[in-house]
Amino acid sequence: MGRRSSEQWARQQEQPDKVAVDVLVPTCNRPAELAVTLAGLAAQSEPAFAVVVSDQSSGRPAWEHPAAAAMVRVLEAQGRPVTLLRHLPRRGLAEHRQFLLDRSTADQCLFLDDDVWLEPGAVERLSRALDELQCGFVGMAPQGLSFLNDRRPEQTATFQAWDGPVAPERIRPDTPGFERWPLHSAANLAHLSAEMSLQPGEWLPYHVAWLGGCVLYRREALNDAGGFRFWTGLPADHAGEDVVAQWQVMERYGGAGILPAGAVHLESPTTVTDRQVEAYDVVLKEEPA
Image (cartoon, rainbow, N blue to C red; front, side, top):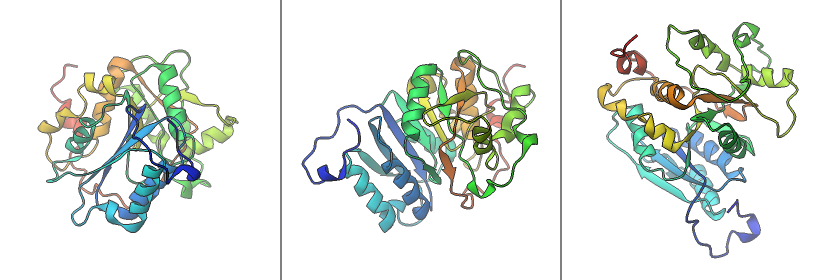
């Protein structure tokens, strides 16, 4: 079932038995940003999806903000199941993501950060790409539109489209693929999309070092690769948990970024202020060379 339009909002409705995508949104102390993120989801049409919001705010949950609450009501009126959860105490980013993953039942799960707006059609494009590519994940790196006039050719030089099927890759700090990481800075992908003259509805997969903010996984692949269960070996203050999870999925199933990137970073100050511990430095330190 797709999105219910406004003439149907007040009609009695049954919740769908199954959805194609679970959208998993971890949030903390960002009520305004969460409202914008939910508004982006409300603009999506296909496929059928459910939303799970897990809040770790220090005060009232973000969904109680009037703007966020209004967007929850819109999603529910559209026929999108919305689950609102409080998850405390805070045990770190990886544990929070695992908590959300454990509540997903759909074949595809989209980890969407609470400061990312999606253009209409973004979820459908991601889902279609994942179905066609049959890899472990696809993603749209959120673009900072304040950088639209800031072209950085030195950072886009590593761009490499997938030529043929997406294949498994091993990425580590000492491998050439790691050098792709600046590709997702600023508005680099917006510039690349414009240069390639991509047409509406057209999309292109490309090689990544990793993706942040908007990543659609095949849930089975993510779980098979270990998910975020490595959280038990990390201190609560850490960063880069999504990097570890994606590298583990990429080694088994491959992963790709998608152009155009219809995800916009809201450019709010980060809530992850302590980055002294990179998750891959801890989780992967014992692996064989």
